[in-house]
Length: 306
Image (cartoon, rainbow, N blue to C red):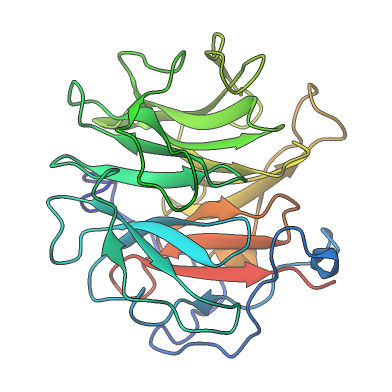
């Protein structure tokens, strides 16, 4: 996985995968609606539609590792190693409407550092940002930054209380009003140790309690990048448990607190040899993935039909 997850295992060909779409083309499709739009309801039993790659200036010859929309879909944060980055840094781009072009990305200086900074995950109100970084002791940890308003600068990120251990933690997603976290934990030096973990807290100002490994989702292979719907009933993640390449998998459960179903492959989101979900709308109708379909990592999104 290049810089962001140094030296992954070699990839295997998978003849059962769908043929990749043209990596150089932007597929014509309407932009996804804001998260609170009534028209955003979809049929979760239906597959996602075609992937839509972000155009320039978001898409670049560099790597765009992970991204996330604001609640209204008018702001996009993503991490990239494009020129001007010190390693992998967090950038932000905005647009004036859902059909308007994206602005030239600018470096989020308050969120970035000379170390690796990635995995931006904004809260619904846009006042809290979660990210993962190795700026501390050299290991990957989940940090949090806050700001007074959406027009203000971010405070300096600090470790997220309760989730900081000697292991690497990254790719956090929160639901249940920010009280439940799913994330990746293990040792990046040995990718097979990366598994899916979860922890909860009483409220967003409290530290997280002891995290537990999600045994029904984890495997002897690499399992990471969990994305969970706000109701906690549907999850997507990436794993190399099948044929050695990184593909998108999904699982469901009838209610929070019970075991997840056996994960199954999501073929329409598995188009290359490194595909990972990096953001999902609260209702699970829109997914953003990072894929190396073109050789470098690019961001694309897809929506389920209504």
